Length: 135
Image (cartoon, rainbow, N blue to C red; front, side, top):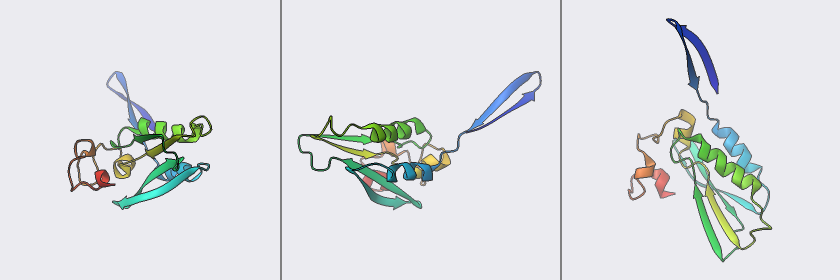
C-alpha cells in the first residue's frame, strides 16, 4: 500500500493507492501443504488462474469457494488464502474443498473491478465469451 499526504488549501488530504501482488498470491499457493492440490485452470491476459483442491478423494461433502472475481476487492483473495493455509484437514476428512482464490488476476493486479476486456465477471457467469467464468 502506498500512502501520501498533502495540503490542499487549509485541509490535509490523503491519497491511498493499493498495490496487489499476484506473484505473492501464487507463492503462497505453491507453499500449501499436502493434501492440497494446485491446478492451473487457464491463463488469461498473461495471468494463470489457479484452483486448489483439498482432500480430492473426499466423497461426502463438497464445498466451492470463489474469490477475487472483482479485482478491486482484495479482502476475498486474502480470506481464501488464509482459509487454505489454516484449514484443518484432520477435522474435515470427508470434505472436499475447491478454492479459486483469485478468479480475476488481471483485475487484481490492476486494482479494477473488471477483467482485461472490461467485463464485470460477477454478472457474466451465464456468458460464453468471458474466459474467467468458463474455467
